[in-house]
Image 1 (tube, rainbow, N blue to C red):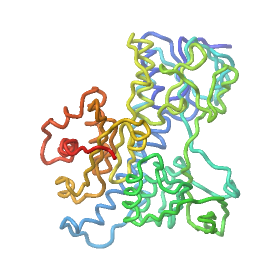
Image 2: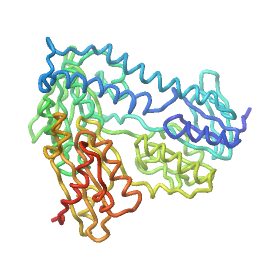
Image 3: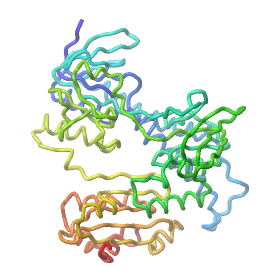
Image 4: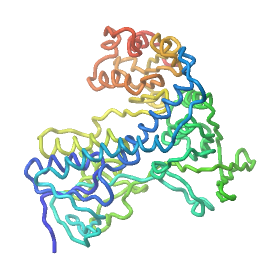
Length: 463
C-alpha cells in the first residue's frame, strides 16, 4: 500500500526539519523520514557535542594557566572524563528534546522512522522496525548528510579505531591519541585531548596542516598547538595498521624512512563522504558527481524534476550554516516568491581551535590566482590591547581588499574571538560596501574588533 503526501523530506539534519515544518505550515501534507535520530551530524556528533567538549578542554587549559592571572589553585588540575562526557550528553539531550517537541507538535507533519530508498522519481520505500511502506509525493527533499570517510589501509579493519562519531562515546582519557588527518576535525580533537591530558600525535599526508589555508595560517595554527605539546608528522605515506597487545600501531613512510607510532587510541579524521550510496538514486535517475555528491543547480534542484538536495549531500557547503541556508534558499523559491541562489552565498567558516580561525571569502592564494590588483593588511595580536589584557595574544588578523573596487575580498582572523569578529567583515561584504565603511566606523573600546578599522587603515599593495 502506498501512502501519498504532498512533500517528503528525507533526513532530519540542519535543513530537513526547517523545510519540513515550513512545508507543513503552508498546508502541505508532509512526511519527514529519519532512520536513526533527529538532528543529524551537528546535534549528535558534530557542532553541539564537540564545542561542548572544547569548552571543557578550554576550562582545564585556563585552570592550568591560573597563576598567569594571579589566581592560585592548589594541586594539579584533574579532568574527570566521565563528567565531561555527561555534560556533553546533557547538552545534546537538551537540543534533541527541543527538536523532538517541535517536529512532533507540527500539524500536517508525519515522522516516519526507517531507511529510505528511492523506487521511482516520486516515491521511496521506508524500511524500519515497523516493516516496509512506500510513500509517494510530487516533491522530495534529500537531506541525508555525510559520514566519516575511512581509508582502505592494510590492517585498519582489524583494529579498533575512532571517528568523530565514536569519539562521542569516549569517557576515558587516552594515554596517547594518534590522530590521522591534520585538517579541521583532526586539529580540534588534537588540541582538545591534549588539554584534557593525553599525549597527541597528528599524522598528515600533506606537507602542512589545513592545506586549503594560506601558509602563514597553517604555520601559526601548528605553532599554537605545538606550544601546547601536540606532535606533528608530515608527508606520511604507505600507512599500515596493526594491533600490538592492547595498543594500536600505525606504521608510515616519512621521507623514505619507515616510522612506527604506537598509541592507546586511534582517531581517523581524513575527511567525509556523502550518504548517497544506499539511497537508490539510480531508481530515480538522480545524478551524482564522481565523489557521490548529488548534483544540484543554483536553487538546489537535482536533474530530476521535483527533487531537491540540501546540506552536506550536495557538496555545496558541508557546514551547518550552509545547510540551514540551503533550507532558506529552497523555501524562499518555493513558498515566498523570493529568488535566492547558492551563488549569492559568501563562503565563511571557522576552525574551532583556541584561538579560533574565522575565515570569510577568498584566501591570499585565491586572490593571487585571480590576477587582480589587491591590498593586504596584517596585524599580530600582540598589538591588540584586549588580547593582551586577557593574556591571549596568539595569532593575527589578515584582510584582503580589491584595489580598484575597494571591496573586501577575504579575511583570516586567527585570534581570540576570531570566529565572532569575522562577521563584522562578512556583513560588509554581503552589503557590497567598500572597506572604508568599516574603516571609518567607530568601534567600542576596549574590544578586539575595534582594531579592524585600524587593520583596514594599514592596507598595502599585495606584492
